[in-house]
Length: 356
Image 1 (tube, helix red, strand yellow):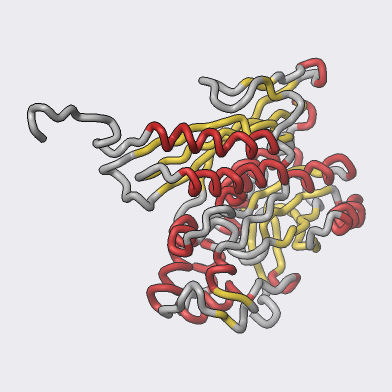
Image 2 (image 1 turned 60 degrees about the vertical axis):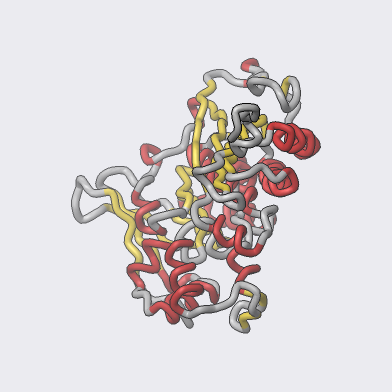
């Protein structure tokens, strides 16, 4: 650089004008994903939300933060960025609803190597769609440009969500009783967990092209891998309103056994039967092509179950009817009983999957 040349932020790789353009493109999406309690608009230093405490006797706030993981690598490879935002919302709000909390609002964080306004808009359009599905507001967020640390086409996304639940309505292990029943809610595929293993098997070992049609899947591999995560928040809240729900388990990293064990009180275990459902073809494909054993599959992937409700035995039929009416595949997965070890918190799978 000559003595007469001035250094600039743009020359260092940060384009403020592109960032401003992106903010303008995001505003309609944030307006679509709103609630009556939202105060102000996008672009301020902080988002404002009127909690309207007169609606609650003893409100408890719940908060959750998460990301999407390496599923983003598939979106980047296919240059399709409008669905991973739905995944992001699902990972956050469905952790909130496990406690019985109604998701209120979400704020996102997008880090990029270079701000490309159209790409940012695509990402936020997915986040806004997820918020609409969850019934929460998109209360703004942050887009940070990191030249020199990330490639120009690279990005990562995360979000924090806040929900509220009446103290008397908090769900959790303390409510679970022997004889309670586990009801499974079907997943829409891999959701947002296990993509490092899935990509390793399908792309590195099997050398499958993302754009290639896969007969077992009935669509391209890329379409299968970018299938958005199902958002169960509203369905779970509808179930709580109609049945005696003890708790939920969001089936993410760790699989069925590990996540159900988290909501079992000491001295109880959930006994689950594999024969009650058949995992989708994508799981069998990964297992066969990668020679992945069953234990590894089940601790890495959801295996076709995205959420589990633990309900009172007398409300099983009512619970299934509520979920079926909301077009959620649901079935009795198992039940709760005493654990062998009085200090243990366990969930155990038995039997075999039909045709898997």
